Length: 289
Image 1 (spheres, rainbow, N blue to C red):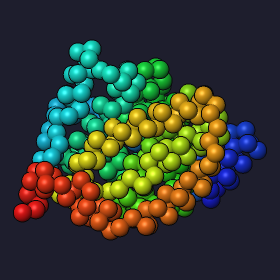
Image 2 (cartoon, one colour; image 1 turned 90 degrees about the horizontal axis):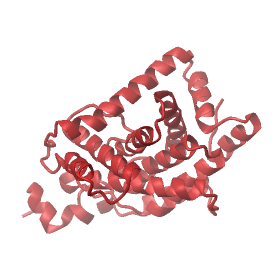
Image 3 (cartoon, one colour; image 1 turned 45 degrees about the vertical axis):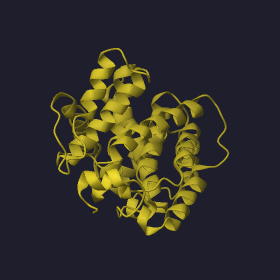
């Protein structure tokens, strides 16, 4: 079972009365020539790594290799625990886990690139927050991960997830689309609504540049992972409410790819533009005179 684009994916879902996660799981079993037990073990390991990466820095903060981040997730967690949070339980948890995952990555910890290291906090951040907020099982979260995988697969097949090719819209943008689509399915939405949410995310993040300070996957990457879970949550809310999405996911994905290729080299992971060349950023990483 395979599909080349979202239109074909949706057709399979409709014809066979399957969720996006179920179709993606069948694709994994068929294309990967794996038995269900092996595939399930691999996804168990993915979830295990995600949970560890999202929780460890909250309890044991560690400075990043570049020294630009470290301890932010704990600060926000403490702020939430003190009853001072502004965003509500779901989003606050998602932001904490997303930022913690980036701290794990930047300190040479083990993470799951979903779809990249620089955007690795968004999918686990939101799904783990959903699990705690709505008392979802690990099996349900794995279902969400299969849904997210389908969106990531389509992006890699038809566009890019690399910041060096398409800017941060191709990293944080795609990761947020993955998280939004998975969230919709986990909250009882249809495949059409999942794809609508993914499309809305890309629309909201279209044109986002990739400008890592000092060329390090630390800053502003960590903050953008936090913004990504917020964007994904909003897009899922819009879709689940029944609001119509005018532009299909395939068309938004093409727009992301087109815009990404037109971004100047300075704004595609070279640290030669955007945030990376501000005086304060240069001073922080000693990159500029």
